Amino acid sequence: MEPIPVILLPGAVLPAELAYGALINALGPGVQAVAKELELYRGSAPPPGWSLDTEVDGVLREADSRGWQTFHLLGYSGGGSVALAFAAKHPERLQSLAVLEPAWAGNWDWSRSYAEHRRLFDELEGLPPEEFMAGFMRLQVRPDVVLPPAEPGPPPPWMAKRPAGILAFLRTFKEYDLDRSRLAAFSRPVYYAVGGLSHPDDQGDVAARLARVFFPDFHLEVFPRRHHFDPPHRVEPERLAESLHRH
Image (tube, rainbow, N blue to C red; front, side, top):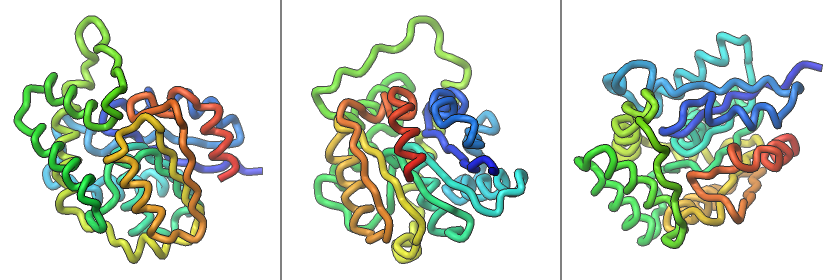
């Protein structure tokens, strides 16, 4: 039996290999999982004209280079937004879609609380990198969550690209047209994972709006003790792998 082909897209912070190593091991040898780095970080700065479509094209190239006519796609955070864009543009290439706390899911049907919460992300622009990252993290967890302190010593070299990369995501979210009708026409299974400790005005709204898209086969799973910065693919990879195999 052929291995199950899966492409895994990371968020805007951790590199793909660091983000998905534990999950790939938990998925086992029957799954050919590829942790694909974002096109956003191929150079020293975001590519000119970068958007979610840049990442969609990168996923197509990855699949084509492996001879995968169809495959499963999983994305976390910013990568989850890319995965939704891919499903809207190339549904015929996907066997299933899995999104883990997508950072954004279209500019329609926002609640008042979600719109206010998104405005707070705009206020991060122009802050020094350390303040920017601290504010970015705080906006995505419940107010009572204690975030871990920064690791001692100098940050890894890849971290220098992250503030600009996150800003690129935030800017394209304002302009990108995620076609609701095309997304609603996606007929393959859709899995959504959310942490119980993530900010309710952020992920709670996104999950509810995607559930209202009326996917024919939509499954929402809550990981009560997880939040956006200790996600299940890193902290509970065995449980997530079991859910993905069922999915």
